[in-house]
Length: 121
Length: 121
Image 1 (cartoon, rainbow over the protein chains, first blue to last red):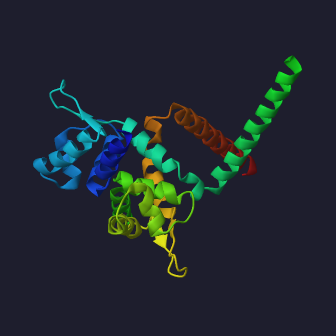
Image 2 (tube, chains in turn orange, yellow):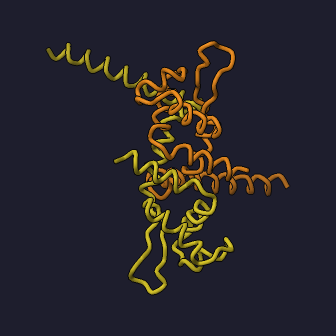
Image 3 (cartoon, helix red, strand yellow):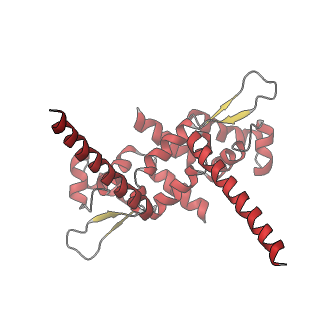
């Protein structure tokens, strides 16, 4: 269910260390040891966070390479961005203006189309 | 702290009922009773969710009007959107192309400026 995905995603993002891990992975793949270092976390400590991120589908861990690198997966972040983006009109006046322009264009297109239909008939 | 705000915001969004309450408030102010109705929640049940949303700064409740309407507050949603938006390049190829064009324009501008500087000197 979409709502479940979103809840799990948002819950995974509700932690500064997990967000910092995603920010690190945005720069490229990293091993668990590499991820643990900057956060001064134990390996079990970082593994716990990685499991939450994996369960949320925000990262995957390779099984092929010996160093088993973690990598960022963007699809669930996109879902989260899409959800929050629905509220953009509440803070973005320029977005509202762009939306107005698009609505005007759509209206104009529809009017032109219906004129075309009458012409064809 | 920015990271704390974000953690509290994402935690508040990690629940389908709370997201549905925000979606309802996006259509306009509503009283607690009005918010409870579509979710088949008791008043204490909806109040619990509203408290989480209020603590996260995602909604406010008016103290002046007798029906004490709740309203959506967009600032924290914008912070969440800004954070997730940082990862847009991972899913949005057209955004990447736009970014490339902008980078080229910036480079060109800088080259033109430095040519201008040499000309002025």
